[in-house]
Image 1 (cartoon, rainbow, N blue to C red):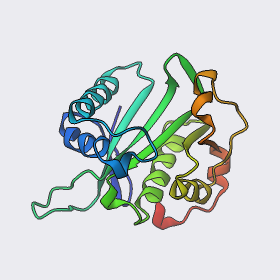
Image 2 (image 1 turned 90 degrees about the vertical axis):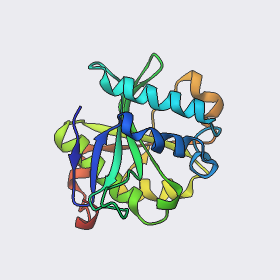
Image 3 (image 1 turned 90 degrees about the horizontal axis):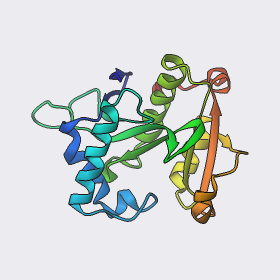
Length: 193
């Protein structure tokens, strides 16, 4: 697993150095409102350790990258992570076709268009470097920002059904899909790349 960059961001595999980022996200009510219940610090540290462990496995079906702005964001001139993106090909023992992606940003970074730009760059990487034929994304129907981003990026409502184990929460979940050839045919704004 490697780092990659674009005009606005550097994406680095989640490692020990991003523990504070994961704790800040998973213990924050605003960040978690559409994801799952807020975790304790101890639980969030376990999530971080799980991310690192999965990133270090060669056969991992779950990979996370921290998102860093390409320019420094503090007085030390050291870029600070603003969130993370994830690519996963299974949930438990269920294989996902196509693979799914997700994003979480620190609440203070929301509403600035950064999620759209970061996802656009991530999608380019997945289609152009990893040669995935399609990707999917799921989000809570109450998450209007994510719905807007999905439409802006060209995702279409998925016709595949959710696994039986997911049906209980499926009433509030939208799954959308994007094909690589559709993405490449779209005119992507250059400021998003």
